[in-house]
Image 1 (cartoon, helix red, strand yellow):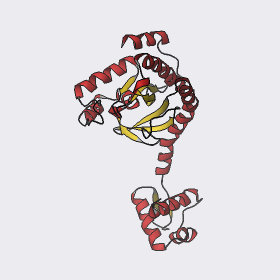
Image 2: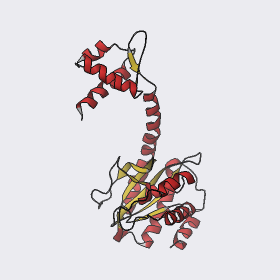
Image 3: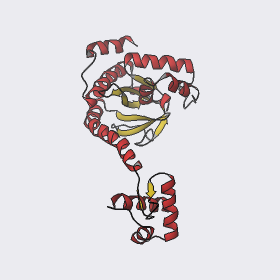
Image 4: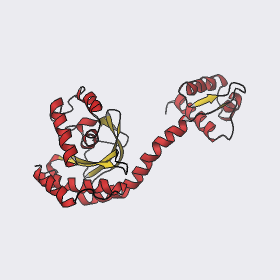
Length: 260
């Protein structure tokens, strides 16, 4: 880890656990840091709104930004815990890798992953990010974004493979289809030999909070297999948030077959 970053995190952690604001000298002494360097790090933390300094006493304490970060992280941790068992079950049932993804700006971020017995090397990793428009979980999320957001994405379509959708009209048509049928497909759009299927995860307020998907070698993702996986993923997405089936599952599966 970068030494300066490490020292800054030490300071932040000390202040977070301190029961009262601390003086510069005490912070430096407790962490065996040089006073001048500690002051510079504190100023950087103040500028980034992680630390505040009392004007009268000159003492330092953490700001509410840590609470904001914690509030942002907690739902993701809860989602990961809720999804863990379902993802393991999907992997055992399909023998493919399972992804749990969220949207961050114009990218999809892999919140969790359960590798199947034959994963694609270096395809994805937890914490990794790729453009929304070129993977199944990303497209499942993108389909439910507002028109303004989608227009922004359509202006920056760059090919990752020869299969990547870089035509704005084609992408728009596909996103409408995804929203209509309830699942998305990636046909080698990030890595040519990798196919994927994904479904959006909807919370009890009707918000799209994440997506769950299966990926593996294109040879294993036949039309029949994709239909089966789509049904499993729709069920899995509903199970994660405990939502009842809004549509009869047999009707869903019938639509999956007819869409091919």
